[in-house]
Image 1 (tube, rainbow, N blue to C red):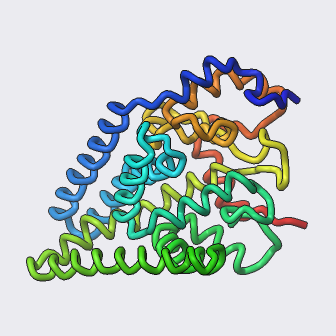
Image 2: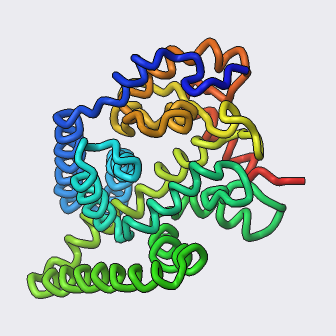
Image 3: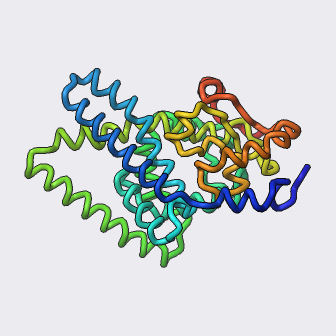
Length: 301
């Protein structure tokens, strides 16, 4: 197997692929928030069955914002690290989650992918009720689970004393700001608007984000090589655009410094090697999602 630093890809191509496109990112952020605003306006006009349907469809696009948070974890949004961090904190706040612990966990995920030290290996382990709950929980209610996990559980499991103190201060700020926003909304009698236009769409984003999360490491080898510890999905152009190209997940793990929208360039060069090594590459999400839901988590024997 080709295991050189660039996996046989020209260093010049890698360097080009690492270039960030600020205008692209700004347009993407504006587009996704505009779709959210339009969907929220429609939700307010509908009865509850309609609200749920529109909210679920809206979740597909809101998941694109979550993928931008992921890009911020890797400093792949903008050339300025401070600007990356700002948008990472801002977008995470919208989802009621602190940016720092989520990024901390993701860095460890890349370092220890598909091993016992991987904090994202919720879909693999010894057969148990907990494993099934985590697996299907991420599928269906990943958003509220993320709020609990990253704001409370993960820091207690992974942080040292100094990090926990800093986290408590950040959490206090998050709770205070959210509390003020909710109080202000109550004063303006906007409670229903906030629930239906903000919290409901986030909740209904869970299946989309959960299904992508499961697909990212579907049928991977435990403690395997880099070509078999992530999964690439050659989805349609529309989904690839909205989810920022992170469906090319093998390529992302090989080259985490490449923005998602440039990963297809990497995939085209890697495709012969991926085929030769029988890496987990799929033609679309539908096949993975149905198989993953029926099959359940990966059980280690």
